[in-house]
Image: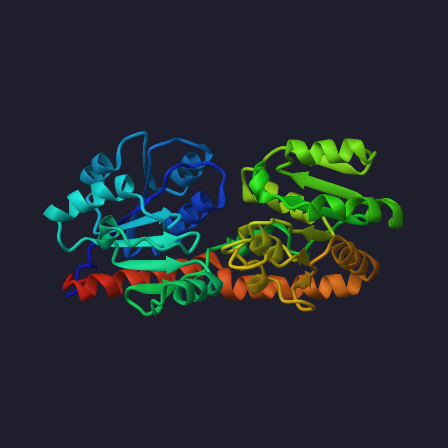
Length: 364
């Protein structure tokens, strides 16, 4: 006699929007890649956006345009996974607290995107805080004197659909000539002057140099005009799908990462690595985010430079030595597949859910 399979556990991922940002994409990938035989996932957002249709295309339900309390009542999850900055947000967490009053075995997990500390009473609803990099976890422990120990705290890298990128770019990038690129949201907070100050030197030194930019901001467009760089800089619209991203990454020889606020993880870097691109980045001072240095290993998966002159020299080095650039790109692809593969990250997350539920006495 065959035993009936266990009932799938319901997991609701809660985000504040479904736009094209990294936080939303991480929620999408985790929800879509949770093992289907054990979990039924859905996504809640009070605001609609392009990711909603992508999530539904994966066969998942979305609860869009309603408050979180209504979504909880409709989906009846055993696990709620919130994706947030980490600082106090009592209005965001209050519906989960109210839902738990009638469902005391509910598990609440947060992805703490920026590694911030929330000492407020509302945060007591959270059973496990997950940091997206070891850098964020170590900084949190250092600044707040809190040990990063499971089950209260853990590290879970953001997922990347490395299988899809390998399918779309089986041979890696195929840039025709010295093409540098960068991609971000069109947000001044995502930029560094380094991304602009390297351009005159590169344009002078490299015949045929091109710079392809997704997420240009007015300051960048003005800089390009004022320095007569219009002929080698191309500003592109946002990219919505991994197919569009792969086509963009595949057109480059090097990815230029430059963001003065740094990265708590660096999804753009991780995706470029998954596509086989070497990456040039820079450190950030003080206690700013620096997980970009956790992803980019100097001389292995890319190069790190602190000044505009050193940054331009790093790009020139990779332009001038395609074999070295390819070696770094392949190392980056291997690292991304080993550490960030979406199916593996989601399976690990599923194991965390099961452990947390078991600690509450829920039979799974």
